Amino acid sequence: MSQQDTQTSTVSVVPPGATFDIRRTTPEDAEWMRQVLRRYWASEQTVSRGTVKEPLKLPGFAAMRDDEPIGLVTYEITGEACEIVTHNSMADSGGIGSCLLAAVRNEARQRGCKRLWLVTTNDNTPALRFYQRRDFDIVALHRHAITESRRLKPEIPDTGLHGIEILHEIEMSYDL
Ligand SMILES: CC(C)(COP(=O)(O)OP(=O)(O)OC[C@H]1O[C@@H](n2cnc3c(N)ncnc32)[C@H](O)[C@@H]1OP(=O)(O)O)[C@@H](O)C(=O)NCCC(=O)NCCS
Image (tube, rainbow, N blue to C red; front, side):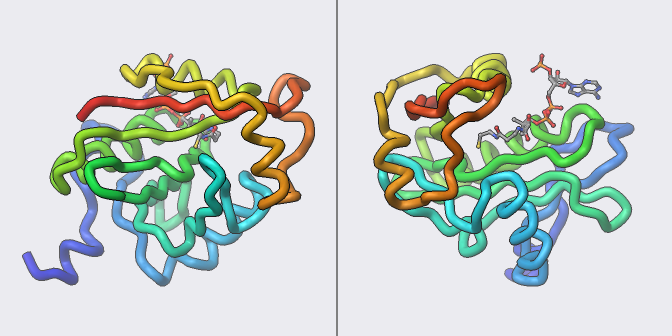
């Protein structure tokens, strides 16, 4: 397989019968990725552990159905750690988030990573449930980290899911 094929090929993490494919993102995806980031993350930047991230510049995987994007995950590999920077399912049908997670997990393993990690916020109970059910552990609570994050990204709202005030970062980790 050529380098080009490797960059654009679909990834075999989708179960039989699924109505979508998973493939690597390419520069041609930038426009819809920008829209996803603005819609779900309020800007094209995210902040984790006090650092601004630019998901548009990061590698990622897209879930596609009939040429329409229905899911996106972006990640950043640093040394032996792979951070999930953004992870979104934009359609109701089940399994999109799990398949995107599997794609990143496989990639991180192939790249020699020992740890897959992410931060979410204290209001995001669906994410806490989703990742714990997939064997992620809560490894740290960074109290009032979002106060600092708001200095870097003023678009972070005061209130999040379920009307819960967004205050803290919760760090979750999966040993590869
Ligand atoms: C977290 C997130 C990406 C998960 O994506 P998702 O597409 O809902 O995930 P899945 O469909 O794979 O899994 C959700 C549930 O559907 C179930 N499911 C999977 N395949 C299914 C199928 N074919 N039919 C019905 N249900 C199915 C899963 O078992 C899972 O339930 P469980 O958690 O009780 O095991 C999504 O909730 C999201 O976009 N959240 C907002 C952004 C966010 O918070 N991101 C995380 C921090 S970066």
